[in-house]
Length: 455
Image 1: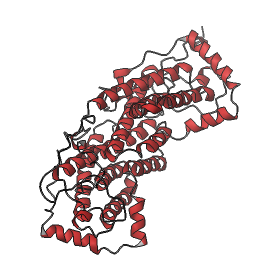
Image 2: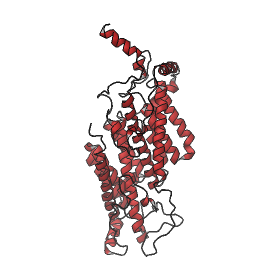
Image 3: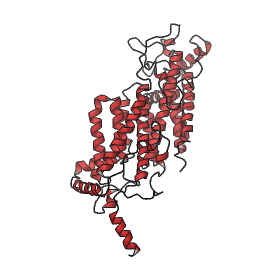
Image 4: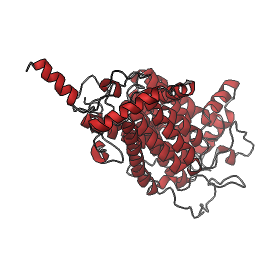
């Protein structure tokens, strides 16, 4: 029998997910081996193999039926969920919610979300290259996908995986939104079927895999110490920070929460701030008091006043676009996770120091001092915004080196704006930046051993 005829017969009799040699031109062929955060490895939750030939033919028929349902609403659904990398829409939904939380809680939520998405993506790539299932239109050229097939294997669906992981983490953090989040995940998965780029079993396996990774992340979260209740004890010595009347301290135990790269929140604890009645503190206060505010300086203070988790995740999302990682789900999810972990660990380290020293705010030592920004309900030293800025810009500079100078300048601008607005002393922000950068350096060191740069 001629060799060509044998090849054709073998191809016709092979299942649609025929095992093939991984193609080096595919997206991140080695990503399934990258180091994970909550999973032992990307293979730890590998799903069962995709269906064989018979069920696959049934799925192809279903995809043909869905082609007739591509009305304007369906096309909008496809376009919405296909925008940028798989985490893009979920990060948007998360930031809207996290901006309403306290700073420690918001950073915790973003770290949990980003770690779950990253680990789920790595598990997806492990399964993709274990099973090497081609996309539906590769098996049936009469299908007419709306989108180009992603440059990777079809099973499981990476966008469904992220939807399963993200919706589960957000539902854990915002249980009142569970129904809406679950519906959004289903819509994200359905969009891939309407587009004709994945099989129903790809999407079903993806949603299940994402939820499985989220469950392990939630197990981690349930033991991170964030549910502990503060006993209300404050120092009884003079000159310590106290909350404004009618308010309670925010995050008094946040410095004890479990961390990702730090051994604990006190690993990098800075030395104490100047005593409230010292000459050094008087000089610090004079610097705040004597600063001549301008429209420009006030603008900068307001610009950086929202929760830092929103500012920095917006920026890394932009960098993902500019460095063209939006078509590289493993690299994009890695960037989000590294930034979020750095921000969270820096926040824990910051709050460890805050509630170790209970340093007063400048306006508490000088009641005549006016502030540009509202009074924050936690101690002054060090600045939480500066800690976060130092950490995330250290990581950003490693991931996106063309913009390292810009990131450093932004961190310094933010730090200066805090004392210029009257809510911090200069030493709060300089020590905060230094502490954050030290945390960021540990995250960068971990990133250099995670396998992403070894391909």
